[in-house]
Amino acid sequence: MAVTFHNLNAASGLQKLNDYLLTRSYITGYQASKDDISVYSALATSPSADYVNVARWYNHIDALLKLCGISEEGKGVKIESSAPVVEEAPSPAIDDKKGPAADDDDDDDMDLFGEETEEEKKAAEERAAAVKASGKKKESGKSSVLLDVKPWDDETDMQKLEEVVRSVKMEGLLWGASKLAPVGYGIKKLQIMMTIVDDLVSVDNLIEDYLLVEPANEYIQSCDIVAFNKI
Image (cartoon, rainbow, N blue to C red; front, side, top):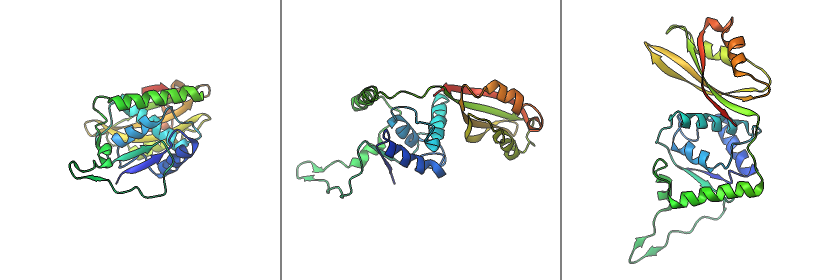
């Protein structure tokens, strides 16, 4: 069943999306899919950190897109720019010559990985114009970072390793979504997202002073920056 979102570039729409993502890592299912890309593309700009769940999800999808880690599968999602109408939509008209009108659900099956259509280009131009007209600007001074954290061997407790990583607390640091990825020989690494305030958090210092020293280095062999994007 398709999920529908309204006014994603308005405060009301962002708040509903933020509430929706409170208990979810992705728009539908248990892995990133084209549904996440649909919602991601509908946002005119990166969401404010005030919408913490949306910001966490957005930064995660942004990093995955750069790593080509999005599945083409999805359950279907609808993005509407206007507020929802309470009345039920009328039944589709039937033309005796042409048969039943085309089912609106066909729009849900568009190939998000194909070439951009003229309608999509026009929608993108309209979104850009709306952003410019409203004077919206991306927030500055923040970055989204994807880390690879590798254990010593295949006997390392990865759950404990992640607990050690997330135990690092400091002003301007927010840990996000994570997953385990195979390295080889039965060893897995932790891939974890974080959002930082650039003026408050140095990623290099975070790694050297917190993740590669005792007691964290009992579990962590190395830590690498995979993606670093300004928000």
